[in-house]
Image (tube, rainbow, N blue to C red; front, side, top):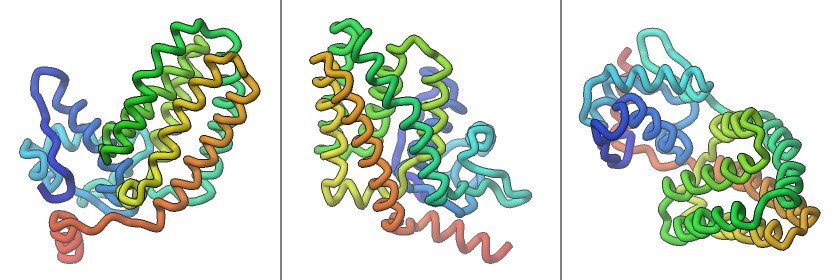
Length: 241
């Protein structure tokens, strides 16, 4: 593989376009595909071992989400997220998620909250096992499933979109230093507070967690992943165009 770590694409279980979209989102979040860089569909398709068409379609899906932008006759550029963007995304998430957690702590059935414990434990386990993609996927499921207990589908959709746009950069370096584990364990702490019915402490825990996540963005941004052979090949191609 060039740009991307090995990911199996299983035709038949879901549309190839959707599988590629999910794999590219994971690569964007983990920093395998770097902000500001331009990637062509044929080169990425070579990494996947498939034709360029589903990759190009997947990149158009990501463009509609604001994760990449088309560059005429060259491919797609990964959109850059600056500190101001991240601050604003965090502020919006805090305005939504902190009071929602308090409300869910007061209204959700105990069994609904307990159903989230395996996911919270999965986040911690993935962090300890350095399974970055597993960590990100379990973290997404936990937060969106927790918010879904509010009964507001649009709220869940909004936070899901914000999470995509505020993807974490440089997580590989943070993972190697063990800095993801404290953030992972906060999910269990939050769940225990909600199960205890302590809405105020749950809100404070969520506020601290979002602040912790924002600090990870800041720390991760200074640790760009090493350039792979494929990235060097892509860069060389850009210079010759």
